[in-house]
Image (cartoon, rainbow, N blue to C red):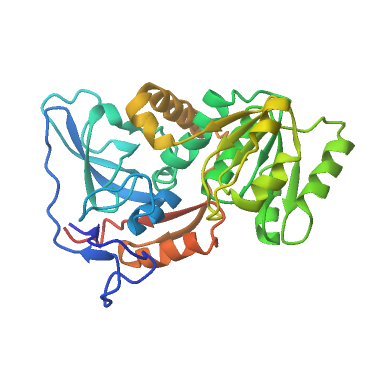
Length: 345
């Protein structure tokens, strides 16, 4: 089978073929993973998404550092290819999706049946490949941690990125008043199409002034929930907009700068700061992730959510995919898609 293998840490935007500097190698004869337990299921991967965590992990900058070599990749969709003798929940040919610590940048992946989710009828199998990590990250953050409810003001930084778009949509499903912060007119147009209540284009306007004007016009006291996958200067500016009792969701640091939340101000204003490392829920609260993905899939099937696919690439174009992620060209998710009619086993 074809698989993308990280044999040394480095820049994933360097082409996997024809360069000694690449961290990634495209293996065209990688062993197909075998069923490893009576309840294991082998999935033929249809689509797998790129997350910022994958980008950091290949560089050795992520909190989880797997031993070399490894196949990167986390969330994926596909069809059941083989089942263990004790598998009762799935049959060959079923459309499924899931997430893994590693291994989805390959044509096949093996998972226990307890880790798989049946994709509802009518859902686009390719789009679902971009679903589990980004949308579940936002769902766990907003629904389980912040307990976002109707009428609250939610501000989403990096709102046109993979997790940002999911946060915006989930915020609208929960009935929140959503403020989206992004950069560039194309991203602003897209966010407006999602029905957000206010969009700030930080390439053209001052965020604080724009948000304060909106809050004043709507007679709102401030931002109740801050969803922050960016960090850096934007976080510092956002703190000035928070209401008494606000909740801060720390999702990541796409800016490359870890922000400081002043403890004295958090004390006086009764803020709650939530660190949200989604991956650790697989160890400490797996039931939360299971419930999260199930509810999200039901929302997707009901048309309440729409997965925005920005770019799609084949496996041998992975460096271009990571480049789109690195350069923040994406509006929504970046995917690697396998063409089953032409792929080599």
